[in-house]
Length: 366
Ligand SMILES: [Zn+2]
Image (cartoon, rainbow, N blue to C red; front, side, top):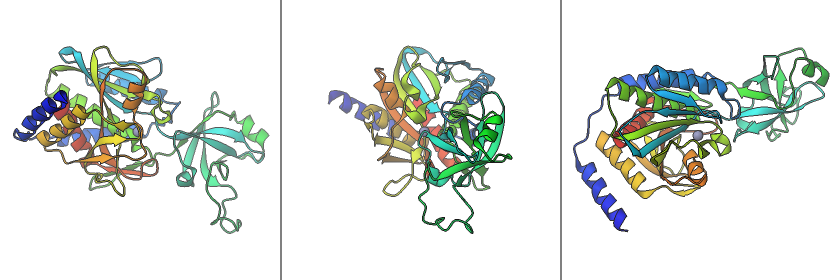
């Protein structure tokens, strides 16, 4: 109780201080550009090498040391003085996707999901099948027997991984034909990200979760670099892989970290208050409440930097930082992110949401 009282007093004091005016347009432009670049690199969970190499290169281009972990994630040293009170920022670059489960008798592919990908909202999406040794083949994820003029059950069929298939854009009619191309069970299937940025700042893609946050952390790194900031506390970023299957943030916590914050998509939907233009501060999700002083500090940071924010509870959500705790790390934890609508579907956010998230990170970390 005593700790909470002290933290509350401190937070209130900080919040009372004048709002810091931040002009972040340049960084928001940068975030959107980098997010679009990363979105266009296929990286379903389990196939993230190229995306991780890109992330490493981008942080290095900003002058920071980055390394690829054994698991395939990227840990970045954003430097800072107090190495005993480090803050770790986590975002993930793996996305949803598919994997070849069966090569059917007609040469088409039955898939299994990677992460929480849903067959019903992936129907009619273009895909790339990545073979182990024989290159990449294109196709479309369709309902079995997808011609509406032929299939009398078209409207009544429940879309699932069993009732949908990949129709390859190749001349294949049998299992043998498809195997001859070099396609086999276990091959990765990447769904088209369908990236679109509208004139008024909406960002749409299948996989904003969580590449938008990777873009935001790059924007944060650029902000530190451009303004020659030496952070008081040690700062690190871990761009994880395997988040979509639950163990992204389990390892690679740099020594001396006392706090970890997941920067991941903020939920938008009925019963919640956040919009795509805001930063969402999560108070509780399926893993329980977030660390009280961290949530309080994030709200204080939003107030201080004038960030448009919402505090919400996510009913069906687990975060990377919870994986970090479950792995046995002794840390205070938090979760923020730009509001994302239609999560794990065709996702939408807005550049203002990214900017507001950046504001909170700056206000909290620096
Ligand atoms: Zn995510």
